[in-house]
Length: 360
Image (tube, rainbow, N blue to C red; front, side):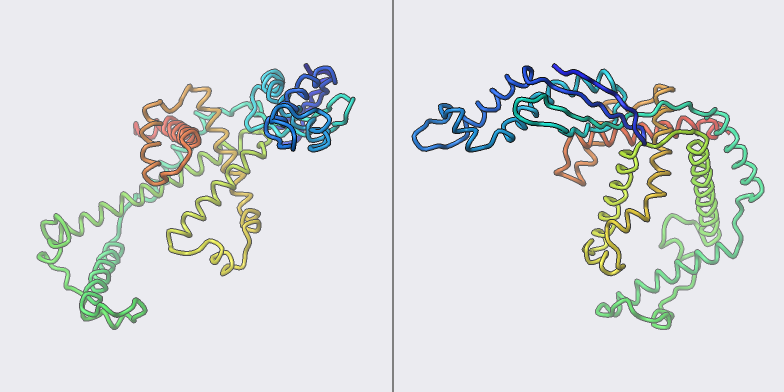
């Protein structure tokens, strides 16, 4: 069906497949294309499906008919070519017709991104070292909480309470008031008052709970810092050229998140862009380094998931897709399943890597 196939590696983990389709091979598909045009075309004096070929060619043009025939050929040959020459493909192939003329072979080019073959570093060793480093930092910091930090939280509680009371007593006042307006509403933090805030026995218990929560926050920030260092080191020590489609995917995700966040604030995306004097293209250019880093990290995690046979289960995917659809009712199910499977698998991989830390 095809001939003169040449496979050429390209930059950014892409492969170009070029070849020809002979006139003899294209001929039956041209006939099918004519039949399709004939079924939908309207011409005085002829019923649909009975319009002469000469009239169809005059009406649509030989090039248009050949292009339609080429599309039908590609539907048959592209999957076979991809499977044979680019089995690790990652994106939909980009097909270009490089030569198309009556009485001549059809020449084509197929460009497709493939997963690069990489050699993972000793990721278990890297994780162990990062966990040890994090433990040392935790030991240095002692993750203690000072009285000053506790007093700052209590002061914030007083301010929040006073703010609510002020607006309760002056409901038509906007939020552009000064601190002096709410000063008289600030409560005295007593045993009785803290009991109105939650299940606290007294002021001492309230302060203890604040201390415990602040320690948890510090532990979480330390965990996030360790995780970021671990993932960045894994990506840095894995040498490969990141496929451009992965970077594009991350850029699109970042743009989608940006648009969601902007709308949640009640703002128009276009108005906000106008306010910050930037275009979408300018934002995407700014985000490019971060998108490349995220793409590298995700790719390395995917490779580790393959090695360790980690994947989301069908039940986990189904449950998360249901939850996602409560927020985005019109989301495409297949797209949602692919997205959820990807995210859950990455999460499982991170959990797998961090398992030694949870055993401490």
